[in-house]
Image (cartoon, one colour):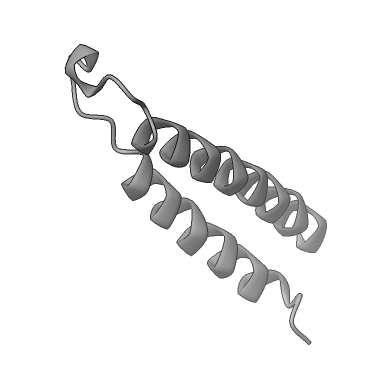
Length: 63
């Protein structure tokens, strides 16, 4: 079970890095008029951060 939590925490951490990159890339877009719908990369980033912290605490990685 603990190994599964470590793996899930690593995947959430990888997703966190990807969402941070996408959020910054989307924010720095020069032509914002071509955006047809609102992207929620900031929200996904914070959810991924919360998931990473929760999984790390559940697996006991801080001990």
